[in-house]
Image 1 (cartoon, rainbow, N blue to C red):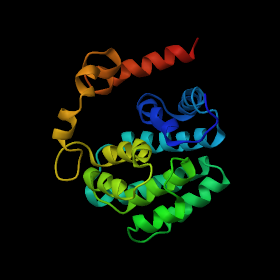
Image 2: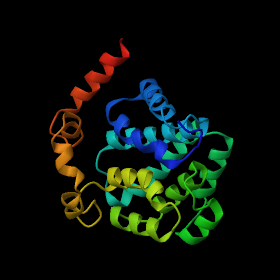
Image 3: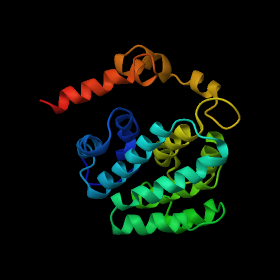
Image 4: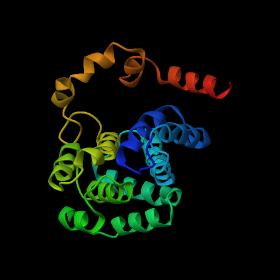
Length: 210
């Protein structure tokens, strides 16, 4: 266990948000984060991220013209889940009018701390269109682009879906070596849609009643 507030702490949030909501989502996220990152900021950003994802799941596939406005609205809705510093940094990310990933990286920082990476992810997503472009800009921003991708990739995937000009390129999915391993497990089939999502929700409800 580490006391650090680093982006890998957010890695379970998108999955948990698929199966839980509200106070139960907050509880599950905190438990998952504190197993590896016993840090208040790590928990706060993970909850913030989880509720963004939950709302995006419930909204479904958005029209391209509405995607970034919808994300901005959700960020504004859930920013109060962050601490004072986190809220101020997110507000600063929201204040940019155009894409300036170099300037934003200098401003927020390029390392993996959530107060650096989280606002930079928001800046990139609000000023790019599509999964491929968001990830390309994230790479160009340098620093811990793989840590930022935990949050950026999940949100961009939820915003733009799979396939087409703006979604996750299907050939990228098919080339991942993890895909066949996921198909070989119950949890993987659940995430890939081969098992109804209700199965996962029932498992969480059963766990919470113990």
